[in-house]
Image (cartoon, rainbow over all chains, first blue to last red; front, side, top):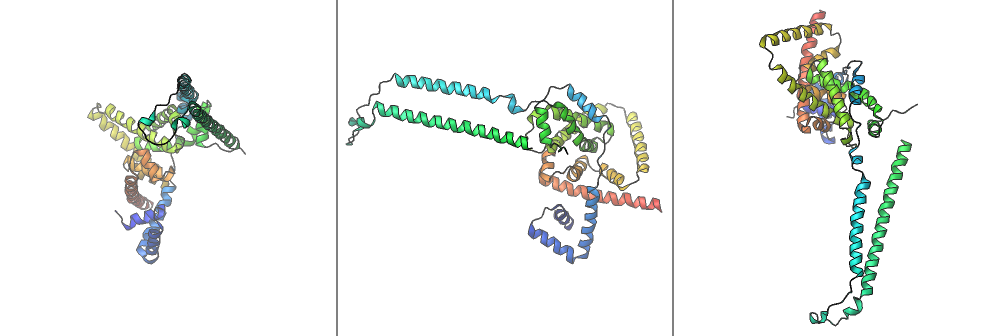
Length: 170
Length: 193
């Protein structure tokens, strides 16, 4: 369905791209019947836009508010599940896992298997993979983890400040 | 001068406990919701019941409203579903009425309608009459497009239809309105002569 009337309505509604717009403008300029139809639709469009809305009874708002007063106050869904509870549970599990891991690592004596049986590379692995190196590796990981947590917390605080500032300005 | 709060600000206030502010939202949207309900119900009492029910439903579900969308579109979706449920229920309720009663009701309705026709003095009354003769969906689409500041996509969202379907229905509704207005205004000219 792409009659001239449909094209004219699309033109009036602003639903045409630049090329289509120019094409229909050309038709309006050159074709008298199209121009007459366009003017008729423009006038109809103005009539539709001037349509008046009906008014409910005077007591409408009061009636709604009386009904609303009987309902429990609405709460935003995101505040219904408090984020702090989720973070506390997550923190408990993360700390538990880290604790167990730390305990296991602390009570483990690292022994490096004799890899020379399998590899004939002339590389002294024992020198590189000793307990001290492993502790250093875990230590670095821990520091990186703490830096990441610090970054997340700072970002959250910054976002909170921003929304507060917006609220004050608004 | 105090700046008027937006819909979203009012919603946030209601959600943070200032429930009285919901009255401002109701006042702001009641005319449109009522008119939309009237497009489906065809009589003021039923339309008012639908509109009232719609605002109460919206209040109860306010917590689930995604505040990134337009409140009006969400509200019109509720109006549409409330009106549909109401009409379905009403159809079931009235199906038990005897034929004689139905006939009497229809007669009364017609005479009231005729009385209204004679009272109509301006073009807006003719327009409302013409819109009233459209299919409920078409009447709602015309109203939402011209008075609800809704795009075709938003109307589609509210009425659970594709934007393209809305475009076709809007075109059809305009054509029918044009024909009905031409017919009604022709009669008016005859009366004047």
